[in-house]
Length: 85
Image (cartoon, rainbow, N blue to C red; front, top):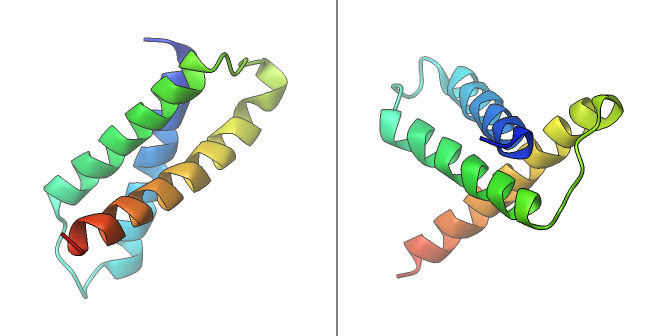
């Protein structure tokens, strides 16, 4: 698996875990939501990989943060779209 996809999946895992810890006590852990977020991260990583986004040692942390933001936005847009169906 290309490094770009792994970084995006890691960003998605961090984002999903932070969402769970934010809601701990108020909401039970939902494995489906967690896996869906990771899948969104994998798709984001695949798109970035296909676009030729280079991964260098100096920009891994930046890419991790950027991919987490992209995963959050894509997931929210998908949720909004699916709720209107």
